[in-house]
Image (tube, rainbow, N blue to C red; front, side, top):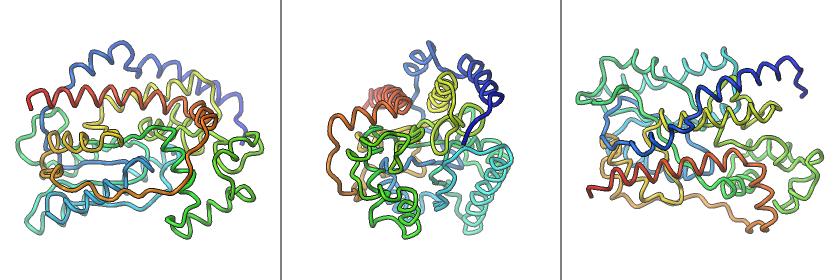
Length: 339
């Protein structure tokens, strides 16, 4: 779908403003170095889980903590919220999610328990602060010491090339739902049988098998909706490079300043240690749980040339992942220095 000159010019204008306003930039190192390790007790934890980044493992752990009564788990299976929305769609989804969280919390309160609610969904970042504080003002646990005690955000990232390769093969695997597999077959057409090496050898304008648009999904999950965030991820608009860079800047800013913890799949055990330390209410004892089976789609490793081609497509995700790794390492050092 083409984009007219006016929207592109508008996005570029927004991009230049956002790049200056949102990019952690030179302050990021200072902020990362000053990361604290205080435990918090939010009423709600939002896990907008990145696909193919240990999310199956996390779902099993959330289920185990829910059974123990340590958290109230709201698991959303709506997988259509990965693309960007306009203001009307965003407002409608805010209302839907808030209603689901509120219903779960009130149900638990009627049962005499006030376990924090953990909401998970494959979705882009949404700022639910006002909605959560408005509804749960009377339900907040005591002892909060944070400026925004009502809500916490968590997520896990994975090496972007590994995540993309896993996603490519999962789309055509029998582990998918029949409807999901049907959509993948329809989308890939006569290229659905190709392995990832064969797919990347097809000219991009003829490629149906994947990697024919913006694939920076992890960046989109932290950027959110609207403005320059429309330039990244699922169904992204064609945008100038300045707008794409502004989307990355916003994603870094949100990751650093709005998330309690963003882990790395490659350091899952360390992530669970931090999760228990920072959010001891819902995740007490999680380090003592065996790390559950992680769904692993079977496939052959791509050729080095294929990995390089994928990395070139995932330029923003690669930079975001490196940034997240720095933040995680700083958080880990801060929390484990006295252990």
